[in-house]
Image (cartoon, rainbow, N blue to C red; front, side):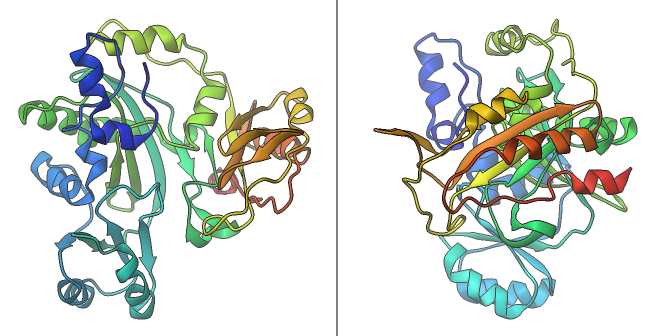
Length: 351
């Protein structure tokens, strides 16, 4: 069994499966606190010596306002618990911060310095000691083109080996992944399963923004579209606790791109129940249309969530992968459909 969502992992589904003698890929409830609590994660990074942004964990509105004075603006506000990828606000000024504080403040809130640089998603599969990295990906969190508007669970992502140089990837492995696995083991909670490091590649080196304890969405879609390895055998080795003999992942040449098609109103109150058409035509172009917020209705497929579909395609280079994904997406239709038109554009500018 491979566990996808974070909430069951934090609730301990892996512990229950293992107690029943079942093969499962994922972290225990204790290890899943890396995602389950932003405050735990930040404190853990300090213990592990992992480079990250300066931060404060606050428990009252008064302490939060005092921390705003300390950090200045822009500043990053993070809800402590699970928030489906929407618990982070980058406040440009005090007015934005004051508006967001009541929404994000639970029993604790993390306030941290804003880091400038290139954001990268770096996912590895671990057996608790060994790990195998996936190709680097880049997510597009904001709802509108040009990284404008509120954060979402992700409006699209692309896979391309050139997102990180070989030297940068080696630095992530040695400065982030290896120390995390070593510290988790030393604390008696070895990390197994997918470890997702949300990174900021700053002018002074890599910094960790956050950890997730599962594959990312929409990063997984372009990863799966371009993966050539026998994933089932590698996952089985991870479930049995020994990746030492597993080969590194092999990829199709070029790049892969996922464009998320979202419902009207997302990331706020969404409209559902709209008829979806054109998926077969998109598939016929060689794309894979991954379902997320869909349901079967009496007359066909209907929208049933915020992020409805992920149209994913590959190509010999990033430009052609982008073109293929958008060519396929144009065939899909439902009322109120919205999507970004600049997925992968950052990569084109980089090259």
